Length: 70
Image (tube, rainbow, N blue to C red):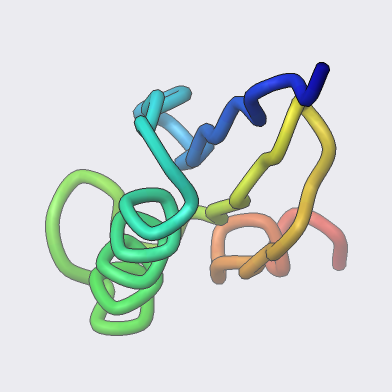
């Protein structure tokens, strides 16, 4: 029996956003990456990750995390 994958998008100070399927998760991830790159809104400058079953599949590191590493 095939198990259903769980998709989440984790956005810095916003938290986890549950998604119903991979297409929705990728769309949500890409939208937040766009906002992060423009430094717009509450999520501006934060990092975002697309998680499948709790494991990162895609990651974008925002300026907030890059500055903290220095």
